[in-house]
Each structure stands twice: as C-alpha cells, then as structure tokens.
Amino acid sequence: MTKKHIAVAMGGYSSEFEISLLSGEVVCESLDTEKYIAYPIHILKSGWYYVADNGTKYPINKADFSFRTANGIIKPDAVFNTVHGTPGEDGFLQAYWELLEIPQTSPNFYASALSFNKRDCLSVLKNFGIKCATSYYVNKGNKISSEDIVKKVGLPCFVKPNRAGSSFGISKVHDIIELLPAIEKAFEEDKEIIIETALMGTEVSVGVYESKGDLFVLSPTEIVSENDFFDYEAKYQGRSQEITPARISEEETEKVQNKAKDIYRILNMNGITRSDFIIQDGEPFFIEINTTPGLSKESIVPKQALEAGMTLTDFFGLIVEELFNN
Image (cartoon, rainbow, N blue to C red):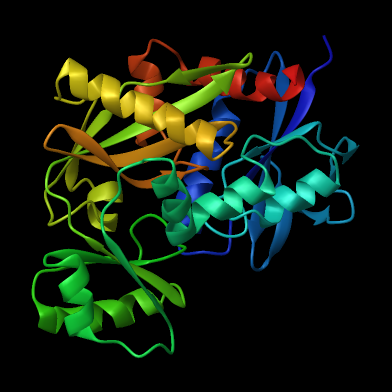
C-alpha cells in the first residue's frame, strides 16, 4: 500500500501558536506509520517550514504548498490542520488549500470564518433556536457607556475578544468599575469585543466528528476551574479539573450532545469540533465552537476519544480517512 503524505500544519500567528505546536506534535506522533508519512509544517510569522526530525528547516513553496525533504520534493496528499487562531482557524489557510485543491481536516473557509467570529456565529445560531447568553458588542473607537452595557448584560459579565482563543484577553467582571480595564485588555487581542452575561451553571465541552458520512458525538467533559472561570491558567497550567464523562444527568447529557450535533450541521462543519456550553437550569447555553480544537494529550477532545475506547492513532486515522472518502 502506498503511504499518504500528510502535512500536519501547526503554529499560527496568534497568541495560541505554542499550544498549536503541541497539538501538531501529538498528531505527528500518533498517525499510523503503516498508512501515512506525517510532516510537521510550522506556519509562523517568521516563515513557513517543514521541520525534519533532525531540526533542519525546509521552506514551504507557497505556490503549491510543496517542500523539499532529504528524499526529494513533497506535495502533500492532504493537510491535518492543527493551527489555532489565525490564519488556520479563521478561514485564510482553508481558502488557500481549497484553491490548491489539497484536502484538509478543518471546515471550509466560510464556515471557519463564521465560527471564528463569535458575534457572527452567535447571531446565526440564535436564529436557529440555539440558546446563548445575552451579549453586547463594542468595536475599537466606539463610544463606550459602562452603564448601558451593564443595563443590557448585567453583572457579573464576561468581556472577550471577538476573534481569539485559549481565553486570551478574557476577563470576568463583577463590578462596573472593572469594566473599562477589562475592555482595554480585550482590545489588546482584537479590535472587536463581545460582552456577555455570565451564565451560572455547569460548564461542559463536547467533541463532534464526522466519519464515513455519519456524525459522532463524544461524551461531554465537565470543566471545574480553580480560578474564577476557565482561563488560560486553568486550561493549560493545571488549575482545573476536566471530568469525562461530565457529572450531569442522562437527560442533560443527551440534550447537550444533540445541541452540539445540531450546531455542527447548522454551521456546515467538517473534521473535529469542540463546542462549549453552560448548562443552566437543565438547559444547555452555547458559548463557542472550536474548529481546530486542542489535540495535545492533555486536551479535552483526545481525552474524550480515549474515554470512547479509541486510541489517538484510531481517532486521527478516522479524521484523515474521511478526506479520502469524499
């Protein structure tokens, strides 16, 4: 059997690039070596490179996404996209690969751009009956009235960059005097921000993926942060518990899994997604969707796959094979 050449894209131009590199490394390590040859591709502001095992960097030819190796020039058969944030989660790379007719594991450019923009995504999903927190939007340069914001969303509330991940730039505001500093912090990550009512309940995260034309949903993971919310420290520095399966009722589990699948279909997703919810009074409220979720061994979706009885080799193999089944 001829092995497929899989470029594993990792890195990115956002604050999340180091986390993405960890995700990409795990995918490279886990792909079945009997079926695939994995190539770690670093996509960074400083340049795009294939990084060989010995550390040698070979520049990517952006004309066709090919690269030189010790064994000659490779043009990959497919891309496993693990770039978090821009340009790998917001549609730019997806459009580029689509133009080059290289299949890749994340949603198409439009679905990626829509889902990455929190306020546009929420606006679409609310029209399909998906429950979400009350929100208020601010662009850099707008006149800001703390009183108007609090009147609409109440306190406590969350202040978030509109297009960022891994909780960079997010603050939980308990008092009106904290609001303007939180907005300035969010503007460091994005020129658009979203301010939302802080929902009270159980936070859960649900992985969804497509295989052989069917949609599969994984067991929800319950997020219990030692901090005030599931911030960067809680996510990546051990300041939280991530409990799979979540300690919620069977009815709540079924509801949140069905909502995660509905959202996947509504937004025309592909590959692996992870949707985050707050279950308040027995009802799931959607927070956001990640179209290139973390795939390191400590990340939520890999743990859900393992809980479902799959190895990461099995799981990532399903995602790649779907590219060649279409």
